[in-house]
Each structure stands twice: as structure tokens, then as C-alpha cells.
Amino acid sequence: MKIHVLMKTGLIGLLLGVLVGCQSAPHGLTAEQIAVLKEQGFRLTDGGWTLDFSNRVLFATNVGDLNPKTRVLVEKLGKTLLGAGLKKARIDGHTDASGRELYNDQLSLERAKSVAEVLVSVGMQPANLDIRGRGERDPVADNNTAAGRAENRRVAIVISNE
Image 1 (spheres, helix red, strand yellow):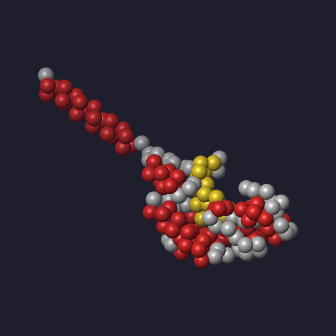
Image 2 (cartoon, helix red, strand yellow; image 1 turned 30 degrees about the vertical axis):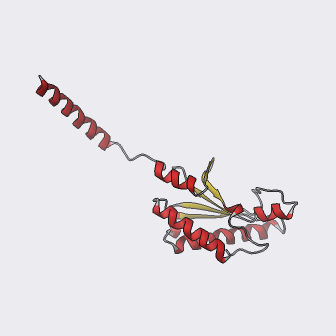
Image 3 (cartoon, rainbow, N blue to C red; image 1 turned 60 degrees about the horizontal axis):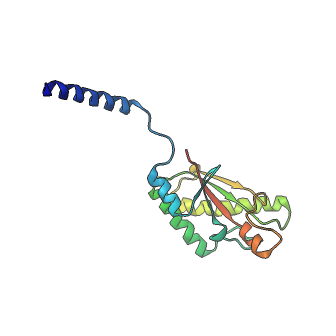
């Protein structure tokens, strides 16, 4: 009787293994990847896991390039993301509300490109980066104060939740 039960159990286990093996791999991020994102300061938003560099990577007025200190931060982040198997990202550049809208759109794109260049330098593929200039459209702080304008001169990195 024990042999019969073992045979049934073994057969059921085998069938379950085959069925599970036939299913496609799950979509989305792994628990380990989510843990890495949280550890790096990303937060879940409607658009995916977002890291808003407003407090880390600030740009001076009318400047699109990263300074050496912020470049090091982005390099470290890029290596961490790649190490966790996160190879795709959207990079949104932003400006404060000073200046003309068309100019701010171009400047925000330059900011996003400067972050993308650093990510590429550590191993991300350019084709896996979606670079966007958001201009002054999505402020995180009050553009009527110097401190608020400084916070709005930023780049956000978004990792899809899929």
C-alpha cells in the first residue's frame, strides 16, 4: 500500500512539475529587484518605480550636465541596477519654470541625456533607455522660491513594474 501511495504522489508531483514548467515566466519585478529599488530610494508610482533625484542630483540654472559628485551617484546607481538585473529605464529630465517653455523642454532633455550617458558608461544599453525632456511641466516644489526652483531642476529615473 505504501508503494502505491508513493507512486501516486510521485506521479502527481511529476505532473505538477510539468504543468508549472509549461507556464511562461512571470512578468514583473522579482522580490529581490523590488528590495534593491526600495533600498536605493525608489517609490512605487502610477508610472512604475520612480527615483526622483530632486534632492540628490540638482542642476544649476541653465546647466544640463552633471557635476562630478552627482555623476558618481548615478554611476553607483547604474551599477546597482544592473547588478539586480534591471536593464531598462525611463529617464525624465525636468527644469524649473524660469525661462521659455521651448528652452526648458530642450534643457530638460539635455539633463536626461546626461544621466543616460552615465548609465551607458557603466553598461546599460542605449536601446534600453527611454529619454524624455519634461520641461517645467511636473514641478515637485514651488517655483516662486529659490529653494523650490532648485528642487525642480532634476532628473527622475523610472523602472517599469512589468
